[in-house]
Length: 424
Image (cartoon, rainbow, N blue to C red; front, side, top):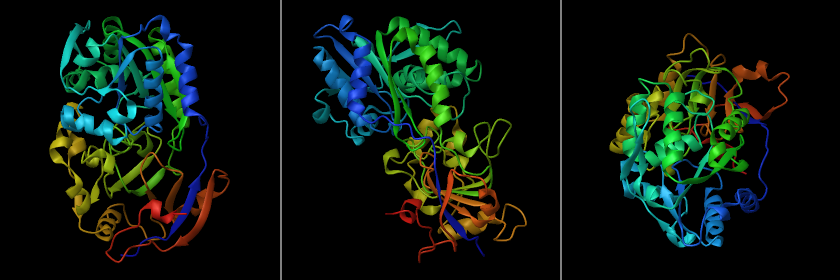
C-alpha cells in the first residue's frame, strides 16, 4: 500500500512558565500562614498522585521541607484510587518511580488501601478516606488541575478529585464511579468534598496548572474554604493552556505511547475528540478522529494499558506490554471497562497502517489525513501528511520544519517515534 508523504511540523503554544519552582512553592505555602494551624510535632499527610506531573519531585520535596520548618512531621500518602493494581505496594512503587523515595524526601511514605468511612452524603453515598491520612493531624492535598477526560463541570480534575478518588482509594473510587450512573459528576464531587473538608482535617491545597509543553505554568496554595472558587478559576485556565492537535479532521491518528502518567484514560480524550464516546466524535468535541493507532505504553504506566480500548488498532508489541489484571482493576473501578478492551493488532506498524487506512474511505495516498504524535501531553512536535498543506496558510503558530518526505519506516516494518524524528 502506498502511504502519504509526511511533513515535520512544530506548533507554538502559550508558554507561561514558573521559572523558580522551589521559591514559588515556598511563597505560596507561606501565604497561607499555616504556622497558625500546624503545631510542632503534628503530622501532616501530603498527597502524591499517579499522574506524571511536571516537577513533582521538586514540588513535593519543597513542600515536605517547608512543613519540617514549621516543626511538623510530614508523611507521603500515595493517593491514586485503584492505580498500581489497587495494591499498597503498587502505589508505593509509582511514587518511588517519580524519585520520591523516603531517603530523598526525609520522611515516611505510608501506603495502604485501607480506608475509613467518615460520613455519608445526602445522596446516601459513603465517604471513604485513606486511613493513614485520616489519622494524621492535618492533610495537605496536592494535585494538578486539568480537564477531566470523561466528565464536564466547573471543576473537573484537581484538588476535589484528589479528595474523592485519590484519598478514597480503591473502595472510594469504585463507589463514586458507580454513583455517576445515578447522580451528576458535580453533585457527587461537591457532596463528597464537603464531607471531607468537614471531617478530615484538610489544612491546605497545592494546585498546579501546566502549560501546553507539559511544564509548570502556575502553582497556587489554596485555603480549604477557597477550594471550590479557586479550582473553578484554575480549571478554566488549564483549558486555555491545553495543547491541541493542529487540524480538526483526521483519518488516522498515530500515537506513539499512552499511559496513566499521560492521562487518566491513557490518552487525553479532550485532545483526541472522544470525550463523549470512545470511538467517534460527538457534539462538543472539537476534533474528529476516524481511526486511532496506539504504538506502545509508557514505562511509567507499569503495564497499565487503560485507554487502549479507545483505539481501533495497535501492534502486537503493545499488547504484550499490557498487564491485563492491573488494567482491568483500574478500568472496572473507574466504571469504564471499555477502556481495557483490546483493539485489532498486527505484528508490524506497516500492517496496522494498511488496515487502518483501508477503513477510512476511498482515498489516495495524497488525500489521506494522517497525524503522528508522541502522546497527548506533548504536541509541539509532530508529523502530518501532505494533505494538510493547504491548511497551513495563515497559521502563524505552525512551522513546517521539513518535508513532505516519504513515511519513514525501519527495516523491521515499524515507524520511528516522534522523539527520534526531532532528536537534536
